[in-house]
Image (cartoon, rainbow, N blue to C red; front, side, top):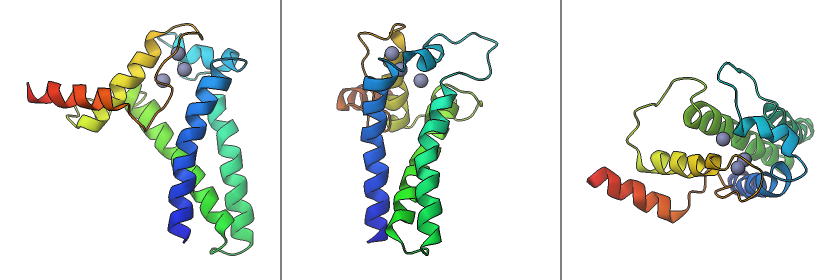
Length: 153
Ligand SMILES: [Zn+2]
Ligand SMILES: [Zn+2]
Ligand SMILES: [Zn+2]
């Protein structure tokens, strides 16, 4: 049961990340997200990083209150799902896609290549309007197909 809660909250976070990216970060929350689309070459931290703290808070609260009730408490596993998603997000989006640390630069993995391509498409739009590919771990099938075909050729 706890595994199901963990997977469900992890998956729900993908939906929430997509929703927040599209309807918060690219609308009234643009002032914090803007520098993620217009990064200066020598810039280490982004205002956009604050979103990570905002999203981390509920995960940590769930973990805290769940743990307080004992490690089998469902709240604990909701918190674990949210927090794991947060870690995956930083690892994949910031470290892998944007290369804030130089790792996996030459990957040939179809899924990773497709995900990176989809996110680069998102970054092609420098303004808050007309965005596309707001999702993250969920890669639109057309990019998977493209990456797969490219690899074979
Ligand atoms: Zn964006
Ligand atoms: Zn990005
Ligand atoms: Zn955009």
